[in-house]
Image 1 (cartoon, each protein chain N blue to C red):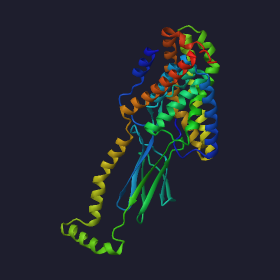
Image 2: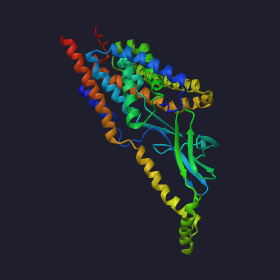
Image 3: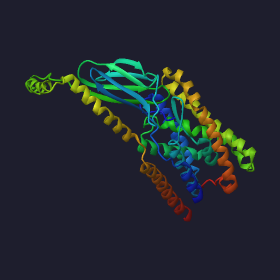
Length: 179
Length: 205
């Protein structure tokens, strides 16, 4: 029996594995929320139904392009949700928070002080935001990828639980047998 | 093909849980002391099989191994599959608590049906081409039935899934072939080195 277990373990231990899930990556770029839907493992998911929700209510819906990307134009700040549904049992969602700039009265004077600084260095506020978004985007992607990666220790953890439960059950059963 | 969280409708979820509960209880009752290592080994195999990706075209699928497990475990496939799915849910967030019952059924029930149909033949067969072919049929049938039950469950949840139900089948054709081959080889190998695991386990009194 031990040989069987070892054989199975060797046979099935994958070298690098990603979680079998559909994931959606979305970020704010300028006046739209853009992103893509993918299966972790890397493959992009095309023609997947995708919805944009604001504060729980659906406002736009679309299908992802051939390369899995989507783009929704947005207006106003708030909590936006992206929901993807491939129809064959996979679904994913993501949240993007959009912060407004200077809508609160007591912030406006501080805002204008900040705004004057970039103008003097030759970059407009909008361009700065776009640049920051572009820089952060790959970091967010990497973060998502890391979150989803199946780690070797997770596999060992699963095995450990199975062996533990099997061992305890066997112990119980052997005691019953002795009686 | 784990159904993700949030897709399953309440009635389907309930049916899934009831069926899984009954089947698992029956399976556990029939698990003797000697059968535990086999159950644990196959549960571990289920657990890791989903990590073996088969990326053909746009969709991503994974191995199931429910044909092999069905032949070796019989009705005990239900507790084995349930344990593996619970652990996958906890460790990798595959599927979710709402779809756990349905996922167990659409993974384990095909294995059990394959057991009912083929186990007698497998038990009597000698290692060789014939056993390979039987194993191939087991693997293929189990995967096909899994696709059937999954798409059936999805359609029951919401008829908008009917169109994509066909996608599940076409996406899993390579899986069906690979499962068939793996099951064929595995049965042959096991018959040669450990023929006693095919013997009917004694049911605990």
